[in-house]
Image 1: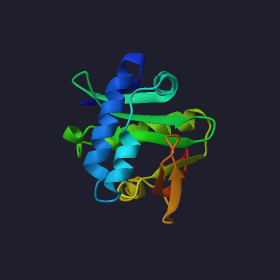
Image 2 (image 1 turned 135 degrees about the vertical axis):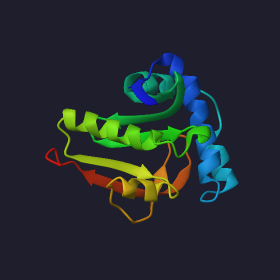
Image 3 (image 1 turned 120 degrees about the vertical axis):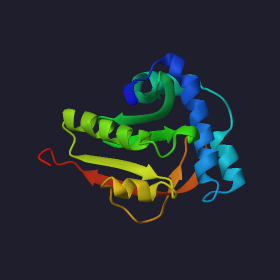
Length: 158
């Protein structure tokens, strides 16, 4: 059974590692090897650890962290939904997305936004997000990646 809880400092390395595995496993057909390496190089920064503590949530199966996600409750931006490749297809990403939507509704947000990797866009569309145009995501690490900006209007009466 998948459960979700607020991330803490001790989750930062696990989240960082599963993020790297997920990127290499799921994005290799859509992005160059150079992009993947730039995207995943380096180690934990103090800023990343701080971000995990402030904004991240984790999915767990039997007390093992298998996924992550975060929501900026001021802007409605969803980010960092990653799932350990060993747990793909088990519903962890969908459950995290629903959880973050619930947080957004509790915060009074009416619109969610995200910048999807090319490979994840069909998943987000299946969850009610819309967006088809290709754009460029500029990472804080200095890498530029093709992405699909997407949004979803929240209807609290749905």
